[in-house]
Image (tube, rainbow, N blue to C red; front, side):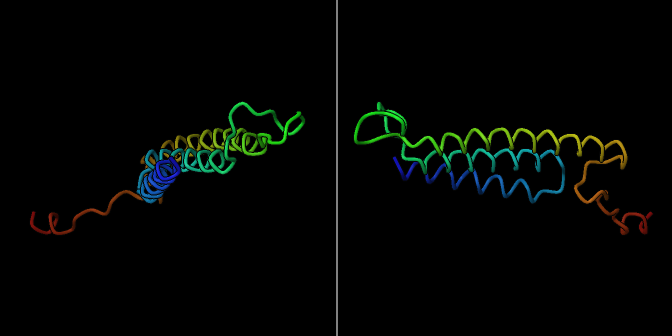
Length: 117
């Protein structure tokens, strides 16, 4: 099971990084979202969830650590705020610049086609 979770985390991270390196804003937003999912899954998996055990303030010899769940909840809120901010930036850049390229420039025109005409 640990191999499957590690594979999922690696796949989400790789796909997210690939999409962040794209030239348009929509794939960048999707890449940030995938990286957020990868981090949430990593934080949740690092807690070694124990079923049927009380949290720290309970009776018993073993307990469930609530810190990973709190970190995932915080990461979800931060990821949502970051995604909303990036979407607003993308909309504003599209309105101001007229295109959705990350660097604000459209693709360069092919000069050879203009010279041939």
